[in-house]
Amino acid sequence: MNALLLIQILAHPLSSEPAGRAALIEHAFNASQSTWRKIETNRHRLTSRELFLHALALCEAEKELDRLLEILRVATEMQDRDHFENRGH
Image 1 (spheres, rainbow, N blue to C red):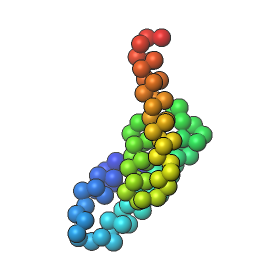
Image 2 (cartoon, one colour; image 1 turned 30 degrees about the vertical axis):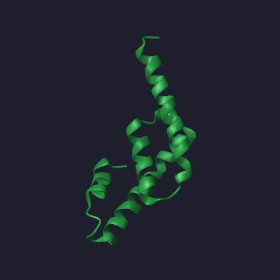
Image 3 (cartoon, one colour; image 1 turned 180 degrees about the horizontal axis):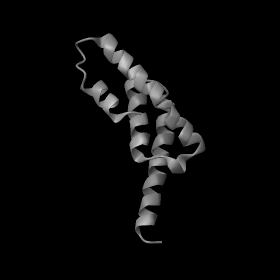
Image 4 (cartoon, rainbow, N blue to C red; image 1 turned 180 degrees about the vertical axis):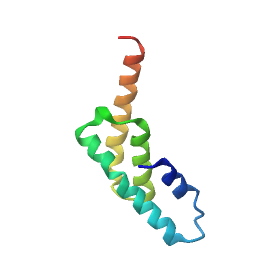
């Protein structure tokens, strides 16, 4: 998902053009679905940016919020993996 698109979503004023904001959020949600597929099948190729952009898109869209726990689990695994790799082992 494009980080600039997500920034546009968050920076867009809530009071003006709510339909436009809703369309941006829906687009961000749909675009982030490939990240969920990576979580399910190929999580070692994920970046933290992809992971947290997906979480943010889910929260903004108020959809699939049950996925957040798994996203946080993967983030924890990534942190542990980075810690291990940075120790030179």
